[in-house]
Length: 409
Image 1: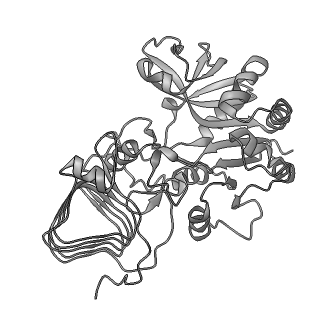
Image 2: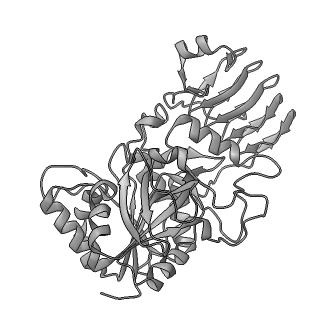
């Protein structure tokens, strides 16, 4: 194996049941985000910006929208054999089972490691919104002569029971790894916080292969539940403090070490709101660390009239009038006059007709909101017609694809 070669295995098979109905027809990594991205674009951008160009993406549930997005947006350099983003569905070579867990997904594809022969394997999730220079984590891993390094985020001790918690020594060597413990261990020197696993790992390739083969023999399926707790007892496992990661171009007013698990409707909606305004918590405009996505070939945004405040408007969208506040409109949306949108996410190919009033609402693709419709004002009414989250966000599920998509007629 080449000691300098880094291979990425991206776990993108998440079913995302807590994000229903946005995941009713797509996997969680394929869910749109902001005015032009999908959630998966964040991990892929972090890897490519970190000069990691050999990427296998392991997919499973409702994977076709994700496969199409990767095909359209993430072709690297086909003339360079080590530059690729390759989608890998379950091959079922060891039996009829789909991926049974995060560790099992990588175990079922160990032959890919044999072909690529890397020195290091980075195993990252595909369902978080963040920026990260992975090279810094790799440098930390090598400086500690670690077998495994786990990306760790400090979280308040009172909320730590919801995460996989890392108990480490002052030198950041991991003593134990426990999923959702009732009494989380605090960070050494910081009794108010605990280290939560971010689901991102750096492995020495030989260690990963050996650990996965042993886990398979034991019937173990998951990194967090099975592999990491055992390796912490037998190998050099370290925690990498994500708060120490530095990405070029991040502005002073942004939240330091921004990272969000957008696994629920409320968390997803809040993260979308975080990118808006004059001083967003997470500014997606960063030429020194771009978040990449597909190249839309349609027309530019067209605004005829109206009032737009603290919002993002995607390409091909036509705004005829109305008021848009703290909202995100994605590609090829039509907004007619006398519409009011407040804190809304309107996804691709939607039409909002004259006089509609929407607030705290996500409208999934291909919907037409009828004239005069009110959504987000009467929770009891909304709950009967749509999906209403615990935090009061209304979700209008995806509608069938329309054929009359010419907004300009």
